[in-house]
Image (cartoon, rainbow, N blue to C red; front, side, top):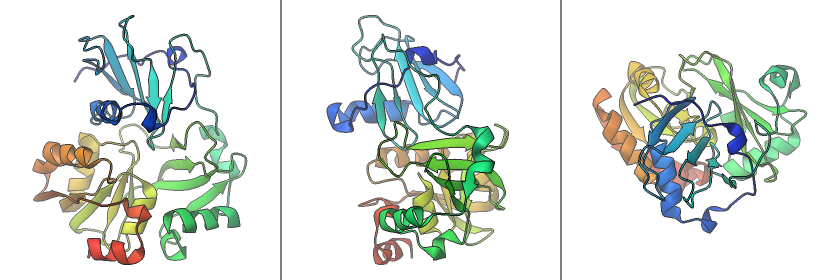
Length: 291
């Protein structure tokens, strides 16, 4: 894979939010699959999924885990755009100009702005994701005072701090989740929720709430950037011989792609087919699937 310079953020300005229903689901999935094996900060040239121009299309996974793309063919109908790390799409026009980074707290102000979880945030986590005190005691979930976001700790297998994922609860923010890495790029940005320190099986999921819910039954690990590379796989294989890819129910193809690409690192590598996301399941459904 060739590493390419990041596209100019001036050309990838945040514009109007486009719901997935306003573009074809096929194109949305193609863009996510094209970026699936990119590590944060990595880019490559590929064939444009719209105009088929070879080497004129550049797709990038940003340090925050977003996917951005641009096609350099002037007549292509695909405008530069972005898919956030949680799947929300923001599209742009070629003439658009806006801020270099999405609005939100900077890395520098995170520590001093973190406060104990507010009652509003605690209620949101319980109602939206089924996260109760029994889940919250396994990690650190705080409130970010100035932005009003929920702050999920991104933690290593031994619990050390790797960064924070700041989740909007209002639905009004352009970017639902902001990832703030606090460790070098040489360390994978996986977030672990360990039931058995070293054992046979680890469940790999796409988001922290699903991973927290699943950890009641199995050791689970959340992919913060929407995909994993060799560095992350090495860490998974260091602790566990069997891996189960349990992606959200709208991304089964992504789970199959991971299983095919990385299965050789493990004694067993399987895909768990879900009828709905783990974080959206009732407790009895979750128990039935994971035990």
